[in-house]
Image (tube, rainbow, N blue to C red):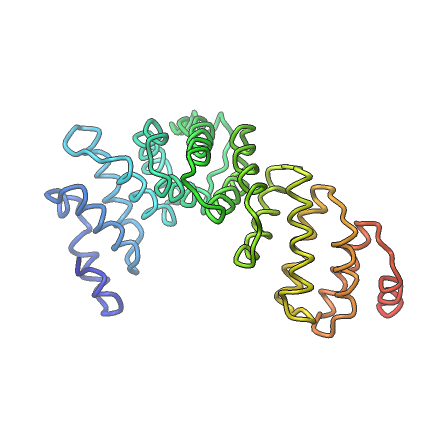
Length: 307
């Protein structure tokens, strides 16, 4: 409970000395071990220290000397995921997943979201044959198990619209697609009225749709109409540079889905006259409009200035 108070007080060497041996935490109950491991990973200690502790804990579980709940496995994975690079990958993460995968469907919506976020933050991409050779073939089952649990959580109403969009974005980062899961998540997004607090959701939602190749015309049209309305009535006029970049990203995802909208093309045309837009952004606007095959007067005038 006090380990966080040590942050910034040059205790990294002391922690490394105390916890370098797995025997130092062997007497701890699992809940205390998980708390220590979570806090330790926030300190500037050699990554071998927490990874060695996690590996030794999995050894004790395999020998029947310790037990852990699925929620505790999620927290352990969340703690060490950022540090778990080869050669540690084969020694820690697949072994944690072997204990966790059979219980994924029983995770609470919160812990399921944490698992998805943790794994998507640093996905491991390898060929199936390489997985079998390294002993981590459990990863072949992970996408189906997780998407099934996500489908169950969404249909049970376990997540609000913000959480649905965030987790759909994580699935897009992992390129994990399931018809039933995508249908459930898209249905909730389609049925939820978009309000001002939902403005930050449009880019990640469009990014997820593009990554998972979800071309759901009613949802995309709803997103575009609301985005264009927000540009007229909610956002500063002219748009500042960060919001121009956001507009370009949003338009880019729609282009990847081959979804065309006259309303969005009109907003892009207006930004060619935006005094806040940089030269790079104006060139990106011209490129987006060319991909939309939209060539209004503003486009021709901007092209003439560039040439």
